[in-house]
Length: 87
Image 1 (spheres, helix red, strand yellow):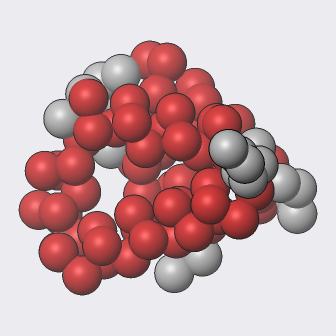
Image 2 (cartoon, one colour):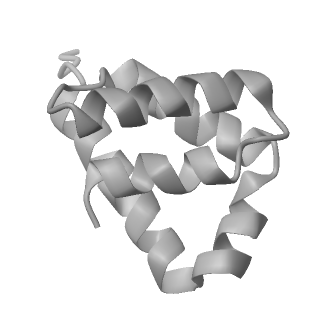
C-alpha cells in the first residue's frame, strides 16, 4: 500500500465527517498529482479518523491487515518528515 491508497481509504469512509472529508480529499488529490502532503496534515487525518470512529469501518470493509498497512504507511511518512527534537 502506498500513501495515496491510505488517504483514499480514509477519504471513502469519511463522508459523515465534513472536515475529515475535505482534508482527506485534498491530501489524496495532492498525492495523486505527484505532490507531497505535510506530516502535520497526515497526523491530523489519522487522529481525526480515530476520534470520529472511522477505524472500525475501515477494518470491517478492508480487514485487519489492510488497516494495519494503512496506519503503518501513514506513520512511516509522518515519522520520515517530522523534525527530530533534541533535548
